[in-house]
Length: 224
Image 1: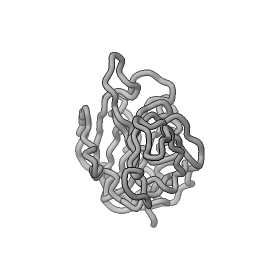
Image 2: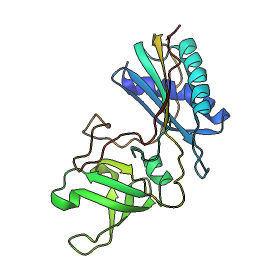
Image 3: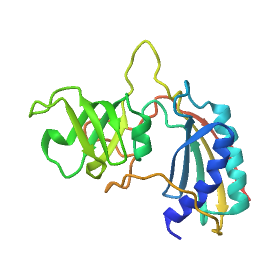
Image 4: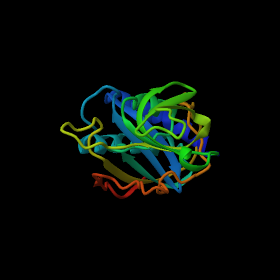
């Protein structure tokens, strides 16, 4: 079974759970034996996901995964929130973060034009636009980029008198041994492809993916 089929089946189980709790399924990944479910508050909400919500979603998702067995073999379930600085991997991520400062690395371009930093001012289904912190070599102050040129991107936390929406980063982990079974896949958002399969590697320019806060819940044990 391909990872995409597995993710579609897991998404069909997870979406109703987070919707019932008035939360948003921000991202879903299955890599290296880890099924990572990233949840967030609904767009426009103030504050972020708290530890109690992470623990509740972990219990409910683990229960449904044990019952429906959509993931083959042994895997680790991780339920987390995206944190103050978050990777942007889908068109929905970009559209949600309009107005935030972002750092972008492009593919198939050379020199300084490969790196962009500034305020994300627009995003549609095909392109996104960044108002640059410093003018480009040609004097332009904005850059509109098709997603096909994107290598990776993330928001940048800007210190100020008011906290950015998104709340603290938290993680909840558990383990489950499951066998694949049928299930109707849910409609998925557009995912931006990347040649770099490890999205947690550091940026060449010194950015890293260190959590600013990292509260971890360890339910532990094997789910059956």
